[in-house]
Amino acid sequence: MTLAQIQERLRESIKQSKFSQKEIAAAIGVSAQTVSKYMKLNVFPALDTLAKLCKFLDVKSDYILGISEY
Image (cartoon, rainbow, N blue to C red; front, side, top):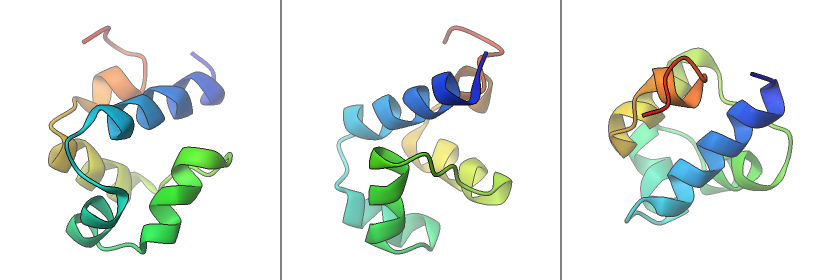
C-alpha cells in the first residue's frame, strides 16, 4: 500500500462520517484548516493524531493503513 492510498482511505473515511471538518478538528485537537489539508493536500496526520481520528471516526487504523480491508 502506498502513502497515496493510505491518504485516500483517510479522506474517504472523513467524507463518509456524519461530522463536519470543524467538528472533527475540535474532537481531535487540531484546527479545521488542518483537517482541510488532510482532505486536499498530501498532508498526513502525526501518528497520535491519526489514532485520535480513527477513534473519533470509528474506523480501524488497520483499514486506513491497508492492513485489513474493513
